[in-house]
Length: 91
Image (cartoon, rainbow, N blue to C red; front, side, top):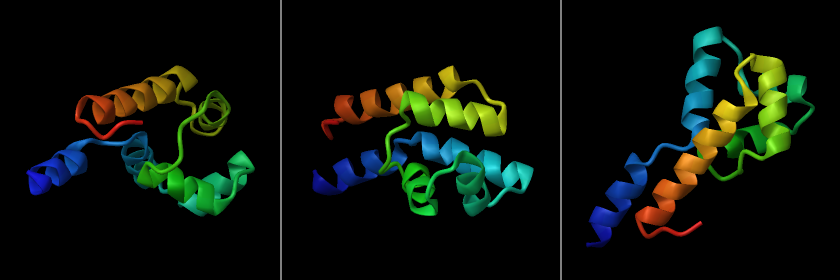
């Protein structure tokens, strides 16, 4: 049962997965994004790993730098947290 729960958790994709894929696609490093967003590199890495929540402020900064609507990032975050909750991992 515990292995099954861990597998489910691995299959749930945080918004950071999408962010990392986009950064790779456009050839931008996380430290470059951090600089452009005026955020620490650690907070961007935490965002990518799903440890940091995509707040309205972060979503707006992502929109400003990456030209992907803030609503997209906020919806990704909401869906991710809902999947965690529905899978019994809480928020």
